[in-house]
Image (tube, rainbow, N blue to C red; front, top):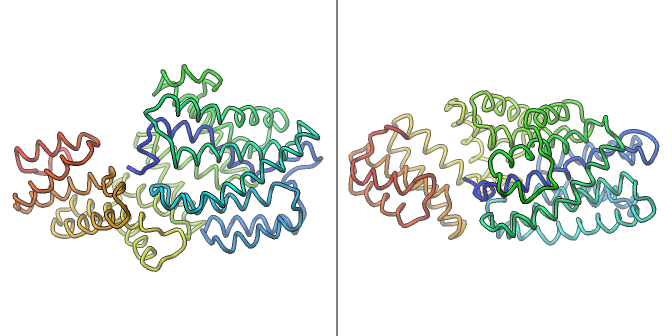
Length: 417
């Protein structure tokens, strides 16, 4: 129901090709002689940890300030620039559904990423097996591809699919080289796990696409998930990203009840560790909702709305919009139809404030359809019919047109949704 989700297999491919950047903050130093972060000393380790803590809590200015210290200490090392780019990426993530907001950060992000590539290339010219250059160049290439998916990707275009895959091929080659250099590193398991999972996912769900991308591994979803779990538990620097990737897969790709319960636990852990992260709190609210914990979901989305109103970092208006939708749907399900309509109306208004594309998004299609349901349950047939007609004027999503037509023929009675 988000802009990312609606690009279907393109999103899966983008994740597969671009999650390698997550392990770039997980340096091993086979090429440098030693283990752990390539700048490993007490001061650098402290800076990296405090900076990533600020970043994951979406304290952007604080994280920028800390990582700029790394850049000043060694301006010819890619680490500081990459971490600064990662801060920009976390500025983008809460706004991924709104292109205009993504575009505001894209220039700074690309400048930082380009600097990473430039420095990494110089290192690789001197030593093609320099693991620092390999990690950070692979990271930069992956994020370039992922930003392309957010800003200009057409999932219905085979050409765009192949272009995205081509941009990711070098990143895939790099991860193989990194595995050879540091085969037992738990941080590298993040990238390996994602390639395994999505290699299998594409083969199962989009065999035509998979057959065109023969360079990708066949993959194994169970092995991929196992690798992500191990990385999330043992990785020195990539543990948070591994758990976030695992959460995304469990919540959006796996459909069984057990995966939903696992997603809830991972979301709880991430939110407990980073209570200022709007993305993790949104996942938590959705996980509560998907597992039937509607009271907890209600409390979580109510908290999100409060933070949006206080304009806390990362708590963007898009979160208010989605929070309002969930709060409305919870009330629809519990029979509080007047309250449901009030929340649906507010969600509809917020969508229109964000912009025309968002106002016609899948979220808003369901908002207007379910608002009609609530009117029907109150016996307000004319208002319900108005909503169903509005849905028919919008794109068809999740059989929304069929559902609206059915409700126009017979008032909604709460059966089947």
